[in-house]
Image 1 (cartoon, rainbow over the protein chains, first blue to last red):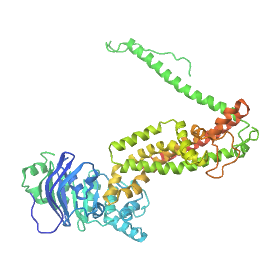
Image 2 (cartoon, rainbow over the protein chains, first blue to last red; image 1 turned 90 degrees about the vertical axis):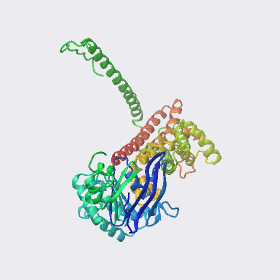
Image 3 (cartoon, one colour; image 1 turned 60 degrees about the vertical axis):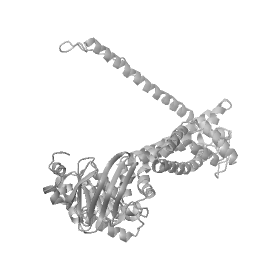
Image 4 (tube, rainbow over the protein chains, first blue to last red; image 1 turned 30 degrees about the vertical axis):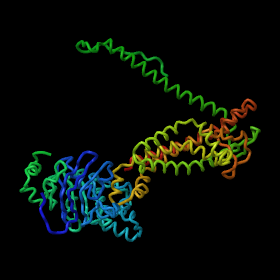
Length: 257
Length: 306
């Protein structure tokens, strides 16, 4: 069940269904996601939470045999519409993956990759954007003297912030994060969480997490998925204090999952 | 091989056990000893063959392999003969083989790995490329003779030889490039696609640069194979003696292995040709050794960078 809100939604899913071959992964999902909010997506493994955010930038289509039905509106326009280019959608909706995945290139080249592939080669713009993005990702002070080092010389936490900087460089509107801290140590996790709190001023963030405390700490809204269904979607405070569905309560109190 | 080593079998230890009495264990130790010796002998005999080969070549080339031999022109008189023209022929052959195999091989690999839909057609192409790698080289020579030599009227020129050799080693380059491309982790591709990159940009900026060391290694190994191949060039009709150094790609030419073959063939007429053949073999082996070392260096330097 979803709470009504009059504001314009960034994303609106309507009766969204998704199948991997014959197996249904998302079932009749209705959800509205609002600007400058952090939405946490929680649920046990295999519940469809990763699939849900991967459908928002249509990355899920890279998997063969995926079928979808229903609708996802991005600022009121269907992302499945033929007039929408998937490359354009993905340049508006950045994605941070579970495992840090910088390119085997220099730190600088990683950050400006998105600009270059979208045709920007002006040295001045590249330099300015690199600094700005690295600052926004709270990485600038650590790497400003070694921008030409290989990205793999960075620690896991720094690599993940580099991946965030890489997304920010093309000025997206939404950031999708698929368990961005699950491969990181507690201090790096803390850094990323602080960063998410900062970034929410400018971006709409949707984050999949396995960590209940993390969802409670950083999110404004929480969506609970179970077996491909969106069981409950509400303010994080309500989900964690007074969930209306017994399944939600069982999950967040650790009785299963 | 060492002298006979006595097999020491110790007295049994601890309480008697039915599963492994000391006699059974003794037998196993003997069998193990024999097995070890068999494998040792196998290894040594392989090395011995190589040793004999190198010994004979070196002793035969002493006094013949010198600077004059490397820089001189071919001649029917053994004392005057040099292989500058032959080395030039091999180098020019490679100048044809390298661009053709790298471009065609990489493009085929990219198509099969990145663009082709996985299915029956893809499997069929894949199987045929693997089969092609197993076709004897003399048959590629016949193909080259028919297509490049006769239909394109290139005769036994450098271009005809180079294109024939390219066909011969193309499957090796394709398979090596495919493996290199397949080894590029999916998460790198995902990162690129998620930034709004098209497939081609992802291939150009992420997949190919990451796969490059693997592609290079495979290519160098394929080129070394092409340098040593003889049969296709002989089938193509390279004459036994070419006195002119080739100056362009439609000139007739000869290559190191072909010259080794003809000199060895003519040893019955002129005994000293054996010394020339041995000297040429050393040149060929040194070139191959250097190329293979390059392949190993590249592979080790770029291994697991991501």
